[in-house]
Image: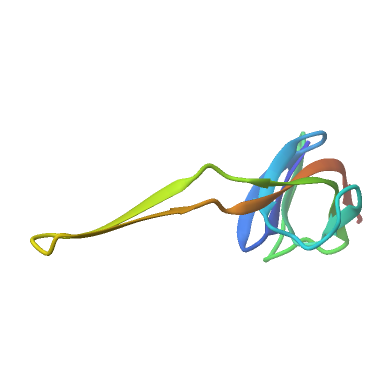
Amino acid sequence: MYAVIEAGGKQHKVELGQVLEVDLMQEASGTDYAFKNVMLYVDGDDVQIGQPYIENAKVVAEIVDEVKADKVTILRFRRRKHSMRKIGHRQKHTQIKIKEIKVGK
């Protein structure tokens, strides 16, 4: 059983017990959050496709922690000008654990 949800403008394929990182959310660690934008639900032969979302469907996840991604290095170089600028960036993400997938009829 799995579902496809929309979180932070991106689509994520989720299964029960899965831990994944989504864009930064403002909720506190240890709380539950329900994603209502479920786009696809598959349970064996039972396949439901939303247009764009499935009604009465939600994915409940526990917010585990706030983490940082790997560092991305940006190098701006101007040739023949003796000018170079090196910048680093680490994006923050929220780590969530999928607790349950509910689809109502």
